[in-house]
Length: 244
Image (cartoon, rainbow, N blue to C red; front, side, top):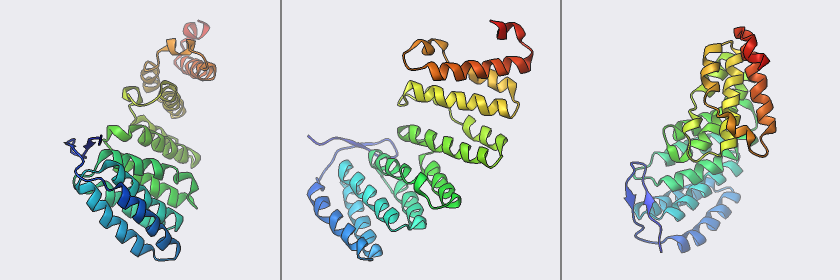
């Protein structure tokens, strides 16, 4: 039974034609073309196929084609083409959410393989743009934002790093694991403390329910949390709270 797909506008559409056999044939052909140096021919063929699969709401095949397109760009080390195609494919009319999610997840694996900082920043920027406001890729966007904040911190831009990571409302993310949520909230606290914004650090700290630390495997996060709270209390002069 074919799964229903959802477009970017939120419309649920039913698959009209199954292109899986066509993809089985065309994708390897295009991968061979790309390896033979005919990258433009390979991409043109896949873009035409993507239009067909998207138009008939074949979610699985559209996802396969999108992933194949970005893989070809990546394997050719053509980072500008990768960025262009990610932006283009995400904005296509009646694009399928599930297919975009597959493409974004694939591209997230390329970020740390970028040859230099400039290329890495550009890819993060492209992926953050196409994931903005999209709940179905909120986890990927949060991880990309964390990477960006770390890069800014390494450059010595503490304020910018703190501002970037603070935009994440991870406590509302239904698809994110509890541990990862707490890790990101602790990062928000740490960077807020680093820029000496003690009031905001206090506000962020309230997003963590300390009952979480009674769960197995949370000892490392518990230590981080209480170290940050001690640092915060010392700055605020709350010696009584520190003693507790």
